[in-house]
Image (cartoon, rainbow, N blue to C red; front, top):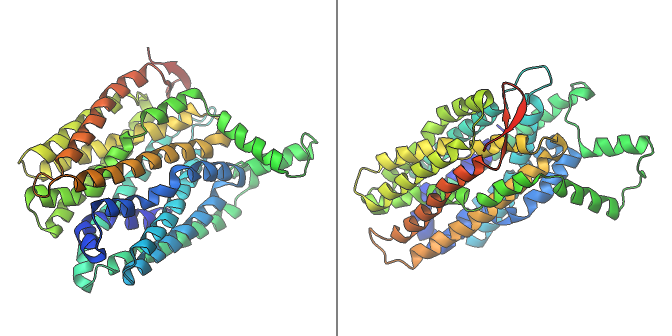
Length: 427
């Protein structure tokens, strides 16, 4: 429930793309700026927030992030109300800052509560991450399905911005309830933070008790340099891969409307089907990873599905439901192999916030680049049924490269064998 409000808010834009362009008098590139504004600020800040979460703890980070999410979506709704495009962009930037930070805090809490324990079994971290992604798809599905009906029922698309603001307030309340719960449990069961470790070292006389700029710089530097090289290979190889999926998802409803001559409501409902399969398949896949591992085998398979999906959607006349369902299957497999691998590649939990922050930073950078780029490409393509052709060429090319990335990853990354709790290298 931590991310209910932010996920619901982010998914409401896609079905309303043509309406927003008309009401706000913006072109596709400008809409791309709005759609990617929640990622714009997250090119660098997730690294900072990840380090801060490692130091101060994920619960404190979640509270601060939830406040940013609520304020950001409220400003977006106010911007829609007064027809101020810049204010909407500012609101989305603020929301994005909180959205990425709360996901990092959430991921660290999952690892703390559900990781494998010595002598206590293999843990269910893969299943929990899969369940989280699946439930996140439910939130996205609700946002996509209700955006146009809310507009039609209220007579104004602006209510499609206000309703998510109310849900962001609900998520903030849930985070506060969790914080109260955490205060009631024994100290040894809480997440170990960098601040606690520093206090313990200071009590033993290992470091000076004074917090200076130099010691903070050292902590930041050590947090980043503690990340293993294999993790850097992972995030660099996936820089534009996850953003290709983000660009596809942000434009799916409009692509269906343009290429299949569908109404906005029909296109919105069809696009929402992309969120269905991940609801069930992602938790199952996560549990499979807990049992047998072999995460990187799925990367090439998923990329091949994306190539087929993009090809059918952009360059065939088949019913839009066929590529949408294929995309839904690929979406179920898309992010989980990487998210489940991060706790294995970065075994020290004290650095997990930094690792997840780096992962989200690179993803956000790629998303910002590609969402704006696809909008600009569309603007430079003649309007009509073929206006998305060049965009689809780009997405197909990116995912074709990812087919080879999955194979190369098997030869590079250590992967934990859940049955023996040991590491085995793919050769």
